Length: 153
Image (tube, rainbow, N blue to C red; front, side, top):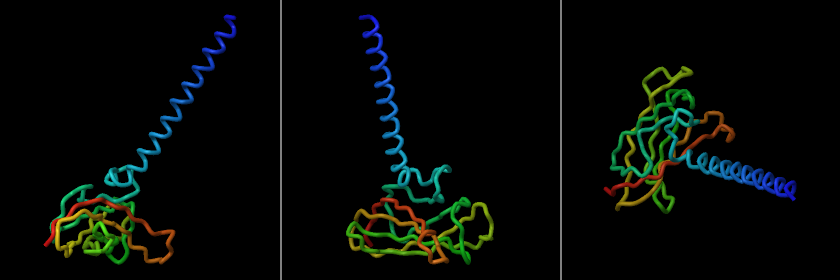
């Protein structure tokens, strides 16, 4: 009887450990999916850093600064584009990130653009940061999204 009780306790212990590992894996996966939007400025991220934060209220024109951090490469002095979309997925502003620095380096380079948009009212939207892909091959396309709010003009 003691042997059966001991085995039962061991099985419960193994089941609890398995359950804890499963919960850790689920939490880890959820954290990673959140990191695309919330932690895109993290040094551990595959994205360059940007001076726009999730939920930030934008007012046209807004100067946008992006540091490539060596994670995205520029081409002909341009890193990519910044595009603002409203909640109905209409593009309401676009700018091209460019630099006057030496962009032909493996390390960080600062890129800037002035985003001017046209919106009749206050709203929620999203900024899409997209890399410059001179190859045209979609496997080299990179982008990330930042949810924002904007003030009409």
